[in-house]
Image (cartoon, rainbow, N blue to C red):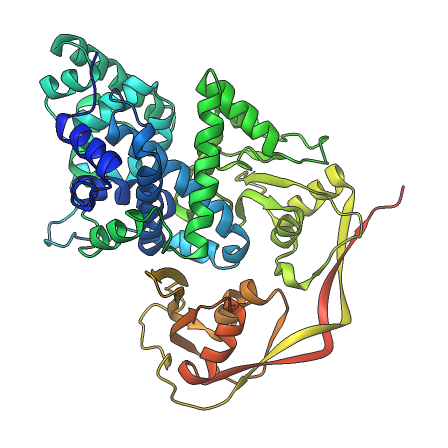
Length: 520
């Protein structure tokens, strides 16, 4: 039988036996690009992908002594990166729910050329279609098929090397790889991606691994070598959650059964009466329709209306939550009932006064029919859940945004040519050993109302604009937290200095959306 390539085996055993930093550093250097690329495809945020890469190698350090010689380390790292990425998206769902729509709509918009100035080719276009679905497709392969594809096309091994790792002949490996490519081809074809197995193979080989940031390998090694004891609290939370997923999956006799059990265990749905309502095209809709919270992907989906208990509560499902909207078309993945109401009535969830007995659980929404509208969703919520909403002026705790000074470095009038053309983006990074974490929030060519919408995700209160500022602005805000401080407090302190804006707590009349159960 086969085992890990000799260098992987030797290095891993050397680290497990002698706690050799040099051996572990060599493993990180060899595989960091692979792990980083999987994480980046899943989360779309390079800074979060760096943190996930740390998580994966911390787990590798902790599990080094338990990995057997038959483990295909690149395949193991790919799977662990997917679990960690999905876990990270789930943890971030609440904090990012306001900013995610704008960010996801921009994250996959490709530049017109890559860093070398090469113009887009047909292969580039194919990759843009395949990339959002690649890791989901790989997850659906059997373990040997998965590892064969990873070794052959992602790691770039020849058939002899793949055969040695899998304990099979070259001819057997060629047949396995061919069958696995056919499975990927069918997966992509069912989702409207027209290609061939040869193009899929070439596209994966050329694009699936990008270079990780230069300093990442050293940072990862320093943190992982001590089993994560120097990592931040958020990183350790990701480590714990990901290892729990891996342990649960290992205990199942079959991966499919394991996923089903975990999904069932992780789902708390009170409104079990919710069912899918769809057009004739809904039969073509499967879970991949929710793969990307992206306007372009939303516009490409067939006409359908689906409202159901979420399939993505557990990170094992491969997705975190999110929302996207393109005109009247709407897409919601693992969203709360309040978020569903917010989509239907076009209000922020902080302006919603929920019913005392509101529906629990999370839901998936897909509305791409010709008659898609917020009114249609309102009626469906009333029909299925028995709730309606109306606007009402009430006294509430709010934050008032005021202009403290003009000319702050992080808030500049925009000179952008396309009005409103740049959405908000957010990224984060950690400083090893300091306990500090920085988050950068920025936008190009956006009105103050967009900044307010983004900030409300951190404060859970309505924000009232009294800045008097008009027009569009470029915003750049760096928020540093540490020593147990909250991110919202850090934002309050950073805004006057960097943006010249101040958030002042107040209690006053403001328009709220009151949700009520229909009386029968």
